[in-house]
Image (cartoon, rainbow, N blue to C red; front, top):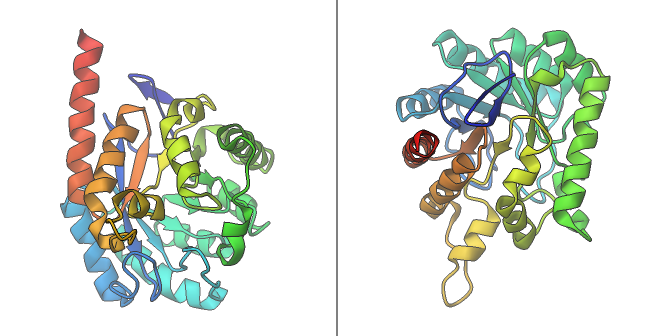
Amino acid sequence: MSTLLGRVRPVGLPEWDRCAVMGVVNVTPDSFSDGGRWFDPELAVKHGLDLVAQGADMVDVGGESTRPGAKRVDEAEELRRVVPVVRELAAAGVLVSVDTMRGSVAEQAVAAGARLVNDVSGGLADPAMVPAVAAAGVPFVVMHWRGQSIDMNNRAVYTNVLGEVVTELRAGLDRAVAGGIDPGLVILDPGLGFAKTADHDLTLLAHLRALRELGRPLLVAASRKRFLGRILAGDNGEPPPARERDAATAAVTAIAAREGAWAVRVHEVHASADAVRVAHAIETAGARA
């Protein structure tokens, strides 16, 4: 574990001198943000390479939508979607993360070249996940999660959202370590939009420093999510389409970077790549003063 201006970083990955940018490649027909645009493997690979050219430090490849209400795909289909894209991007020199809740998909994606496993369930959805990641020895994202997408909105009930998310993330970290994953490899994600209302998401973003007190690198994934749509809604109350929330996403990126997040996960990379560099320049100037 190393730090720059207080930012905790995972072992096993490059040590960027600022908040890193993770670009999203959804190899799905039904993502809330860009469903179907990159479903063809060749298009998905090209999109991943384009994201890197725009400033992404790594690319997160997922084959299963986790939008609210989404139904799960079967294992064979997820493997068919994900593994070829991971293999091609890794062969091109891209640092690839695999976004999956299945241990078997994580295992095969790592074998194909993925260097990070991003599990929105934090190992809860599949008991094979933690052992697979422990055996692979790669960094592991533990996200705050209360259940599958099909009914997660019903689980958005908190007495104190910050306190409960901190407690549940700490439990996720403990489970991962107890399962054999080196604590230096664990990254935490507050799970914005997952079993949370817009007010819950905003509260968590307002208290990122409390989440950092867990002592692990923090991944913030706010890109195009519902709470941004609510903030940007017009007079008629209608939120703008997901792809019209990128400026708002970049605003969250700048805040997250300034608050010491290790990385942000975004669909549109260019603006967020600029935002983290501006935040880093301000952070560095402050450290010199």
